[in-house]
Image (cartoon, rainbow, N blue to C red):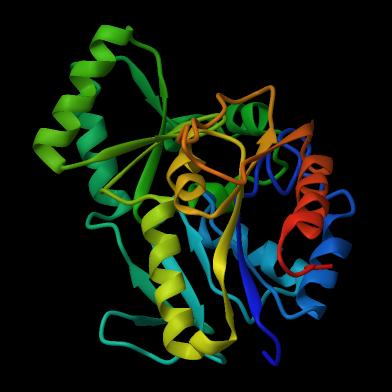
Length: 279
């Protein structure tokens, strides 16, 4: 990186790509421009490693880190980043696990809790049902989770509060609500993952980074990442509950269009208001 780079954290479904058909629109071309101008586009998503890695190849983001399962794991490309004491080798990446329990452990816990609460574990649903809910042709990638499980809540709001308390008391677990499912995992979120990624970048090339952080998201599980950033961009999504941004936060942008056009709209806006153009 020869010029100062902005770190641009982005969610995927409903933000960078269409919520229903997963289209990138022309955002792939926009990302190429950002990369050409030495900026770092960092995926921070609830999707799995397999799902994100497939998109990484398509968008040529192989030299940039990314976070999966709502901050449960971070993957740093070996080509760019050094191994640290907390990292393990995973294909062409150094993997850092921020979540304590594995997906298998969460599955066992949730199976037991189904005796007391009404919810469906997505992994137990027929593939045809999952495909209908997600509009995905292949759901193998989304089910190959490392440290979380997805559920669909079927019980009352009162029981949900009891479930949250049970989750916290017995497993110190958290719930991240996405556009389609609730993710159950150990305490982790996109803010924690963003902070660690920023820390690693500073160790690598602090003098070549812009101090202001950019984040783009559309739903409640993006709230922590957006509120952590200096330039939070909320992408319009009629299918999700919009994240609440701190009232005192400055430089907030809310797109008028949904993804993928909303992502382009936000990037074009940032190009006009940032101290240095990014396109």
